[in-house]
Amino acid sequence: MSDKKKKRSLGGHVRAAFSEIPPPEIKRTLFRDFADIKEFYLEEEQKNRLEKMRPISRGFYLCGWLLKSLFFKLTPIRRLLLFIAAFMLILENYEINFGTFGFTFNMGNIGALILIFILMLELKDKLLARNELAEGRAIQMRLLPKTSPKIAGPVRPIK
Image 1 (cartoon, one colour):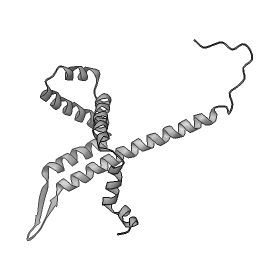
Image 2 (cartoon, helix red, strand yellow; image 1 turned 45 degrees about the vertical axis):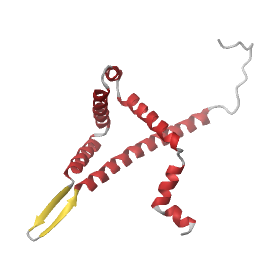
Image 3 (tube, one colour; image 1 turned 90 degrees about the vertical axis):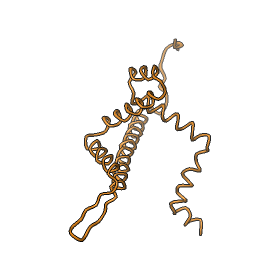
Image 4 (cartoon, helix red, strand yellow; image 1 turned 135 degrees about the vertical axis):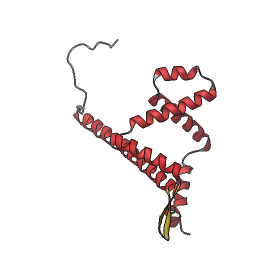
């Protein structure tokens, strides 16, 4: 198989994506990302309550609070889609019969596709916000003068 075909295959994309992350960095990144999630979604009162709990209780409460916070930060339509996806993941197989003709839906797969769709929408929003910030930064940089202005008078140190 040629190098071009390897790069186009799904396996090639997966290998390329994970080859950029050295194994020791994976654990560090996951812990940092989890800490960022807790910082973003949890309020100070919840963090204080978690510190006083036993480890097992802390895990259950943390999962519940994070899921609740995530759910309410979504738009109403995305909340509905998330609820439908969770329901479909629980249902798994659903059979429909029309007399002698029948077929089975794998609802779990459809639920997983809906979850991927929600993730794609959230990522799109994040990338749009990043682009808007970059455009705003570029506009602000164009507003700055090319050279520092010369100001008459004695120069005093800033305290």
